[in-house]
Image (tube, rainbow, N blue to C red; front, top):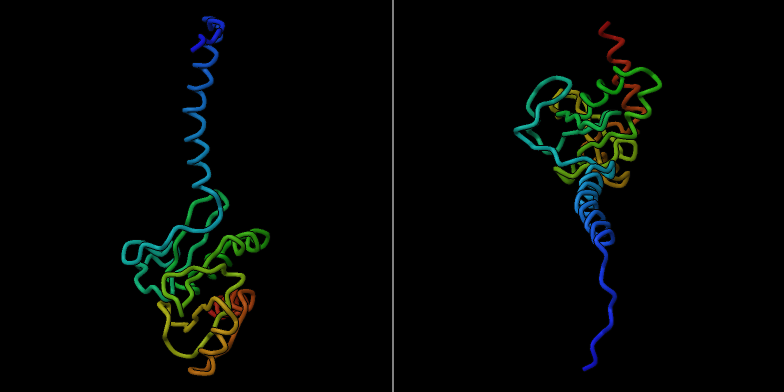
Length: 174
């Protein structure tokens, strides 16, 4: 076999290659870690361990939990739709819309599954039935909410209507 004629690598070229490889070894894992922090969705709720950021109860019922990512990217966990709504309403008016866009609620037909709060459909029924006793449940689709409404009654609401109801109850207590 004929020998390949490759020019010898210079010390400067070798150091340059070493620097590039070292930089890649540091930068690529960092980029992968940042990708893991993307705002694609919330981390799952740790039932029986997470504490409600609003009322401080332990989040224990997989049919009712909720999550909101703060403007700083920190995840706040709530034990119910009502607590999430209260926390959202406690923000300044301009921040409420943004907070709503960073909120998820548990689909009560699929315990443990989180859906965006602004997309979910809510069913309010009289009497207890949720951790805070206001009877609000979230559903991942209008069809699921309507099916449950036919079975058990209640009032179907959007997220904005939930905020209005909870806000009205806040005003009534003042």
